[in-house]
Amino acid sequence: MPNHSLYRYDPISGIAIAERNPEKTCQYSACPRRSMGYAGKKMKVCARCKHVRYCSKECQKADWKGHKMRGCKDFQYANDYRGWMEQYKAIFTWAATEALRIHTTDDILYNVLKLILTYSDRIPASRGPIPSPFYILSCQVIPLDGDMITSLLATSTDRVESRVIRAIGGAGRAIVAFQFIENPMDPRGANYMKSLKIDLKDPLIPGYKHFDGWRSVLTGMVNGTISALDIGRSIGYQSSNANTEEVHEEVHADGKDEEEAALLDRLKDVSMSD
Image 1 (cartoon, rainbow, N blue to C red):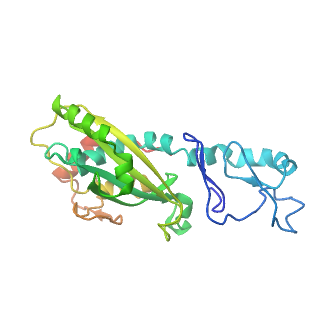
Image 2: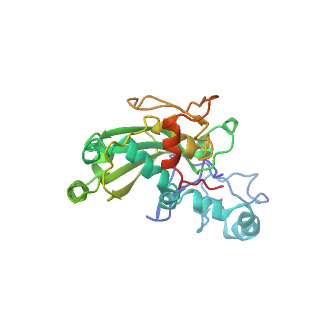
Image 3: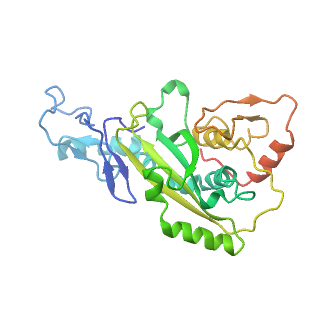
């Protein structure tokens, strides 16, 4: 996983996000300057992954073969926010459908599903393997003007176009706001905002029964505590009115109830990557 002292990088926007006081360490294990330290030395960052640092071109060239084998591409993937959103788009679409209760209310016109996340390498190793490069800390439904982040990510045009979709028979435009926090213990530190806009043009379903446990399923699938195959037998239930929540599992010894069976059917096309 990425070194904590290095840059976070969004390849779509071409923006590098640095920590306040990044540690200067040359990635090349046999670097001749390592014993002297790197105070005052300008470090060079790998142009491909934007993570690994070197004190010179010589060290970078000497370490390239090892860096390539250790996963330069993995570093790139871990910071591809847009690619990650597309990978999990099916579960985000489902969660927005349930959270904004699109079939029974007009919440989609006035609210946003907001997720607060950190990087998986910030989570203690004792947590076990995490399939996603990002880890959901909390999720909540807030008004479009609920805070500065959502007011910037959800524009007036989005509101108008959401109503247009609603007027022609669809549900509207669901907006999922993502706030990526570098340090979970310091939410005021380095962070980055993104949004995923999902146009739901299919007709509303009369009598649709929304699933109140959407938070636990969303966090569980992204954070790796549950998978699509687990949903029928082990689902974490939380109050749909909570602003934030931790993932809890409740094992059902008696098998699937009607709500679980319905959920399985809705998520049948969702797949998790390795």
